[in-house]
Length: 252
Ligand code: 13P
Image 1 (cartoon, helix red, strand yellow):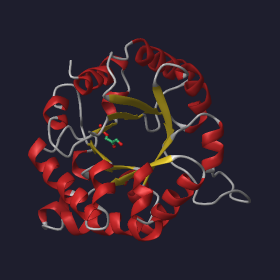
Image 2 (image 1 turned 90 degrees about the vertical axis):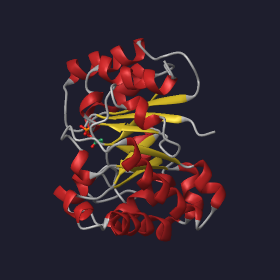
Image 3 (image 1 turned 135 degrees about the vertical axis):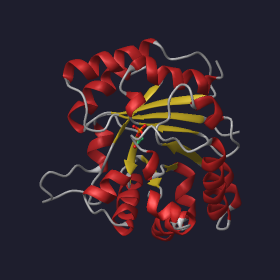
């Protein structure tokens, strides 16, 4: 039985005051139960302070990006070991915004995935197609390319301590959610692709859905067999919105 992971990607939002209020609100409202894990991914400058506020609450902290390098002359970059040092357990790699706006290739994403694990973090590998790719019928081949780059670089066993997030680009920040069936089809495909390499790893790996997930659509999405949680943007910026999804994960 896979645990449900409810992860908030705060993206480039907030301030000291706003993020403190947000983490305090989340910590105060963690639902009872043990079949789920909550995770918040604040912007880099707030990681340590949010991690300190979350200590002992059961809410884990992750980063939104990581360098593929271990250390050295990489101005402006942050290593996995540094993120771990300030309290992170997870890091998002390959978010579509980084692929599209910062030209991150699948090979670079794979290198970041490997670096994250070497530094003791669980990577959350994002994959997903654009609207044009979906309409052209290439959803599965786009995802295969993104997934295979990491399977080839890291090996399937690496997915024993990693998470996959399916985020259709057309559903991110648009209010246009994939239907539970649409998402389930892709999640099943991803799991089958991992299973072709190692069935036991595939059965265990958490596959999150991301793209306009909120309290109202979370129960339907989370009820699908291969959807093991959510990676949430907009609805992770208000404690009550995020906790509504947490409640759905807790079965309330
Ligand atoms: P939204 O929930 O705002 O659509 O964002 C999803 C996302 O990109 C999470 O990483």
